[in-house]
Image (tube, rainbow, N blue to C red; front, side):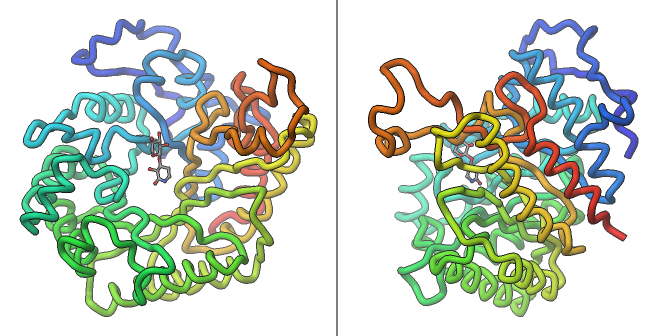
Length: 379
Ligand code: XIL
């Protein structure tokens, strides 16, 4: 896909964004030192993209330019979730996602359909309704609102997000509203419905906590693989798996063998894999920024070297591009770990777990991603 030289930014007039069309062009098509992650990934036979928010794209020129320069894929951070689309029953609010789609189309970028069924994005009215009536029609209507509207323009759908939970049920399924209303078969049913509406799209299940060699994640991997096997043998229309990849410097160890074997088992089921939400939560915020950036980059290198050794891994999207808008916050707990280190009103800044810093400069994490793509291109 040669998206770069022709890029121009555009948002639908419906949003009323007063944005000049000139001056939006990214420094696209640049070579060598200025190569972008989109380009490096494409040269390696994969793709790179990021979660974005359309309101920020509209409001922040620097951010928009960075997105245009670096990304071939966009994931709506929340615009497509059920509670964003249908806060009021039967009144789908699709303007933000329409704008995101127009922006992507105008700039020849692709969009991931994220995410249809997620326990954390069920509108209030729907939770009660599903449980009381055990009636699937609100789900069908929501699917039809978003899938039919964007149809072929979206090639990948996260149909079910985060269905695994340990410690409750033998089958490892999260006791979310969908499970309580419809039983474990809700996943197959959702996939079937999505397939009817998007016959050509890649239908996915997206999951977190699959990365580290610790007991809870060992269990999660096992239960996730079992779920995939069950869906496969039931003939469910599942094409790919999203491994979120929210890395965490407080967690560990990371075992290349364990994680690599896990990806291989997914591949053995005939499923493709996307690393869908890469970012790194830091732990020790006292270190100098250079050291913090080094640790983050090191973690990403270890992880992606295993991921990109697996040919079933087709792409990578990070959960944000710049630390300016990271969803990872430095929490009160983080501060409490180091009493007296920072004076009132002072602090370690933002979490530094995304490829660009808060000033949109490329960080060691960016270089780690770039190098990982280059080291192991798809054959
Ligand atoms: C998060 C967004 O980043 C937040 O802005 C929102 O409030 C909650 O959801 N896993 C997912 C994403 O699959 O959809 C989540 O996104 C982050 C965790």
